[in-house]
Length: 279
Image (spheres, rainbow, N blue to C red):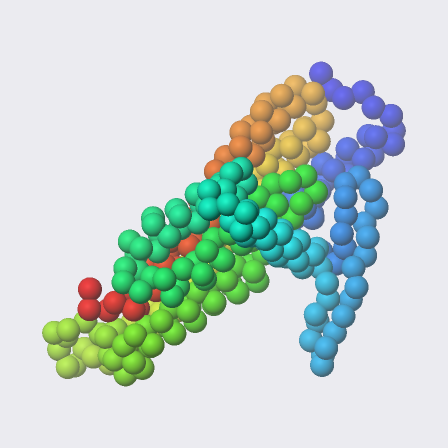
């Protein structure tokens, strides 16, 4: 059974059919110099430059600020709850569960002694990624963790924290010396040193690509499933497309949480390996 529409709607469907495989999906996923609440018109955002560098405010920048504000408000609420009572309830109690989880199930097992120094960073990155992922699941929202620039920045920060932790604990010479396994023949030392140095950079690279790819893939699948309705121009495919899109959407809720956990856990693991090289 084909859609019976007016000429104008047919033209719109034909345009959507041509865009489903290309611009239509990427339009909803990639960053943009405007802010839009579908189906209303787009609101252009300021274009700024400083010393020749483009520092324009984009859609992802707006949501980056929104996540930061939500984090500040959330932890302000938790802080006020603890000031009133040592046994908070509701939202504060829920946040406490997540904080204890990061402390006891991520930081302690992977870093061990001295984990307290790195716990603030691990909590920050966990909640930032968690909030960012869930904001992207809200209608008209944008997933900033599907922006490679954001995930690379997070990975670089984790890399710097890891190297700083290892150097502060073992000293610069001791840290880089500890990268080479003991008992390696002298003629292999130059090769092993190069391999280990490359390994230092592949770890944050893997962090960035894993988070970026997982958060992008789910959104592409959802839009592609919805796009089948317009591509095939029939009501018959709508129930199947919508059912599968809802399933993937619910799966994305799980993925959003898991990705925050994985990024935090791996960052904590790399820190632990750098700090305790002798273990």
